[in-house]
Image (tube, helix red, strand yellow):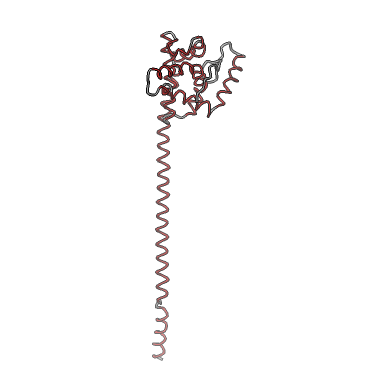
Length: 230
């Protein structure tokens, strides 16, 4: 009886001991779990990095939008100023009476200053758009009609001024009002609806007003002097 019990206990104890195979399986499972955890940690770090980049980009975009909005407010305020409004009226209604092939010199001194300042204003706006300080959309939406009208009215004068600079030996005469021309081309090619809509809107407004006023805040009734802008 005692021998049987001892043998029986020995047999039961031996069956409870883990074999080499069990150790190998257990070790492999632990390794796989470790790899999965490392992969999960790596994936989580990637998600956190992506979220951080998205948030940083959003913050940069918001900061840029805030700065751009401030610049746009100042630009629009200046565009509404009495001085630039006077300059636009002269360009839209009177400048075609002068021999623009002579450049600025064909104008009286006071009008020379007005026209020059208006051209430099649009040239500065074009530089800001080109260098992504402000977006084209609000500029075209608010100033599009005036940009198109002013360039097409002033184009012969601008070409004459460039010719004068070339004759005087200027290193790069074409740069004069280059950003203004760039801005005009952007509005004309990327937003051709402003050219078409302006004519239609001016015709509608002419029915209810003796003064033709375009939909973008300028005063205009002609598209004359559409010189080459390539």
